Image 1 (cartoon, rainbow, N blue to C red):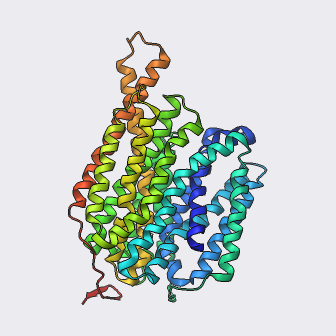
Image 2 (cartoon, one colour):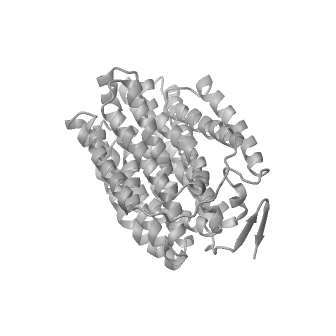
Image 3 (cartoon, rainbow, N blue to C red):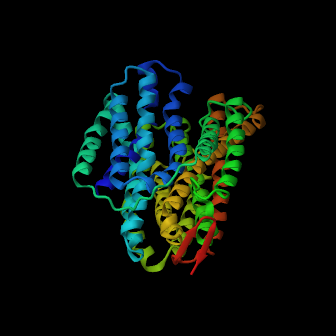
Length: 473
């Protein structure tokens, strides 16, 4: 429970700052592109750090890693709260991200180490409350605080909870995972950092709108990242102690589950970013009102996560994924046809149904994927899925935001002779762009839905990992 509370605070913090960026810009006098680094930098550190967690979990004890992660997060929260300017605030966010990147893979690995397979769905469902409810209430909570208080309260409010978790873990947390004297391959570490960091940064720069696709700020990191990842993958399959063991992809259920999660993350991150933009820029809702749209969905996800966990233990992931993806696809289709006259309540209901669908499939599919692996590969499987989620979120957001922008531009080009005023045309152009983006997201989810019909209930094999040989008994 203490680990779950720590992960909750860390993940809540991930979305708290988005609504507050405009206030921060005015307070410390920075440009939008500079302020965006507070979000981009956070994602970048997590994207770089998660691939390394497989090595860290094998090398260090549960207590060492959790206390280090919470210590970094707490220090970063204090630095950010008291920051006199942009440099200190960015440093605080980087320290927070360093802790956050360690916490979730560590918690997942602990669950798989101590919970028997027939109860893992329920345990992962409990974690699902944290990783789904926290980011959903973040924008709402942030909107309320920023509207009435200083943005620094966002950090001062988190600080005592982080201190409590750190202190409680120091006295009560026990070691539950076994450690080995794993060696880190320095070349793999460098390639991983360049590869995942380059891709996350390049696509985030394009997705957040402060750099175009043809700019060096986007192209160079992406090209560098893809080349580095190609060499990284080759090296992982060539050395005896890989940083990230790609032999997890030899397991068919893991492969299919990873594909489904990548597609879902691309669509989900994009919807969570596009919807607030539409509500504020087209329908002219306040940040608080736009944030409140997301709140019922977060509550539903929190309620449903333990229920779907128990359903997974009983029935497996296949039908949960089929029904959940069907709900997500239907909701994205409905989002593609919202207009200026669509009621606020309708948008709220649609978003709630979207979150319901995601809650039915995210943790069951992830648990099903990891269940198929032998215990020695749990840290690697967790790290791979966490990394793919971060990369998919950055790529999906950049791709669909670009699709939205291009759709809006095409509408404006075709409507130059219209008699409507510029403000009305811009709103209609945004609606047109949103429609194109949501229809693309719908198509992606249909692909994942078709894949989900081939999901099987995973049975963990007894496996010996000896160098490059995998023997299944």
